[in-house]
Amino acid sequence: MDKRLEQILPRVQKPARYTGGEYGQIMKNKNDVELRVALCFPDVYEIGMSNLGFRILYECINAMDGVWCERAFAPWFDMDRELRANGLPLTALESGDGLGEFDALGFSIGYEMAYTTVLEMLDLAHIPLRSADRPGLTPLVFAGGSACCNGEPMADFFDLFVVGEGEDADRVVLELLRKARREGWSKARYLRAAAEIRGVYVPSLYEPVYREDGTLAEFRPREGAPETVVKAIMEDFEHSCFPVRQIVPSTEVVHDRVTLELFRGCIRGCRFCQAGQIYRPVRSRSVETLVRQGKEALQNTGYQELTLSSLSSSDYEGLSDLCDGLIDYCEPRGIGFSLPSLRADNFSMDIMQRVQKVRKSGLTFAPEAGTQRLRDVINKNVREEDLLESCAVAFRGGWNGVKLYFMLGLPTETDEDVIGIAELVDKVVHCWRVSAANKARGVRITVSTSCFVPKPHTAFQWEAQVTKEEYMRRVTLLREHMKARSVTYNWHDAETSHTEAVLSRGDRRVGAMLEKIWRMGGYLEPWSEGFSYQRWVDAAAECGLSMEFYANRQRSEEELLPWDHVNMGVTRDFLLREKHRAEKGVLSPDCRHGCSACGADKFLREGKCHG
Figure 1: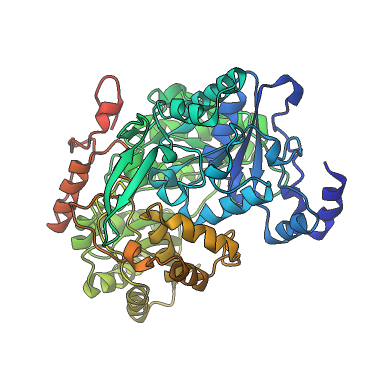
Figure 2: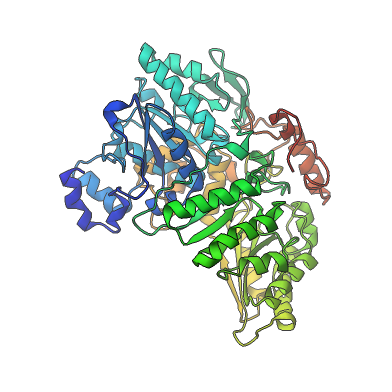
């Protein structure tokens, strides 16, 4: 470690964020490798080290012969100031070398509000922000993650995007870079070749053309680039990479535990949910594989908690057998076992009794909407009686608290739907009164609402987001109707959601605004300490852009969208059908009870989804 960095550490919060040296980190001799890769997470250490995808990619890339992948995270504000004041670059944890010394920087981006932090990390690494200002082959700066299914706002800053799942695609990109270095290719030649790799989007090979009204007229491929970029996918998920030898953080992180990924994709088809669409088709791991991975990861790390991860864990077909297998190992060792992402329509006492054998965790359900009409619009496929029965089961089993998540501002939402949330919560409280096995402790109901953000590659990608003022009016309306003392109501702030909608559906012109915001001090904006809505308003005005144009405008079905050249598995025709069914309040079946012809089956060799 640089002596100057050692001198800084006593002056910052949580210095263990920056020291490395954790148990399980992968060390290689940099003189023995051909390619050095920095896997960058644009948030602080505690968030990045809790991200399973980040851990998977670290394992996958380091499995390559001749390649060393290290980690880098965004420094907190105090460390950021110290680095700049002392003229020190942002460094990787394993070697302590500055990121500018690496051959490739790969950013993992799952949230649009992290964009300005990417720019800060590049600048701290003394690397030019824009791809056009980095003429050399290295460092290659690329990105992956769910936010990259519309990479246009960051198109000017990245050399390429890996769209879809990165376990194999990242390695192909890096192998090509190794070949290009050996043979002395130019950056332009490398990018043209990379554009032929499935899942790789090279934004400099495409030219957006705009109409006078600001909408897209066309998207022109250059130099033989494919008209459509098709996402990368791990078809054999059963045998895909999973890190059973994980890094054990030397400071507390948000999710300090072993996380097992049950399956990718979702059978449900909620119309607002981007993840449920872009990770189709559903692919699962077997019970035997998951039990083995869980045991090995616990043995290798010494973690005292294990959790299951997926978009809807209770939809895993072998869940009972899996719980039994893991609890048989966890219970005698005092290891906690938790099961998040439960569905209110298939929660059972049988599953609950298995989970609570070791340690009782909180219960969370996401009805999303307060009335059946609106739940049908969004294709939630959860009935009020399902939720109430699940709560009754929990209360009879000894739980005295539940968290409920809803959205405000969903398409077609009325005041009756908003008030319906309060009425549904009252019924949950009543359910506790008549069902609870132990009333002495009282009941705790936590209700949280967020503002609906229309996302690309969903049936609601054409919809307008409600204004900030309208969202807060609905929050106030709901608060006024939330009467029970046992209910705590929390709501997400309107300004962050508005900004997220701008970035979610932004085009390439938004990049200038992002750079302006960063130069005005925007950094770590998912944190309240780093976010300033006024800064966004001012930057948009200076760049001649309208935030309302991106967030609050209803798109026509004929409009060319900035992400239409990216194929994430579901077809535009399917999304339009779902949009029309939503307008009529018509449900679509989940994948186990009927195929909706979304197009995802074409991503599997046998042409059959695993729903």
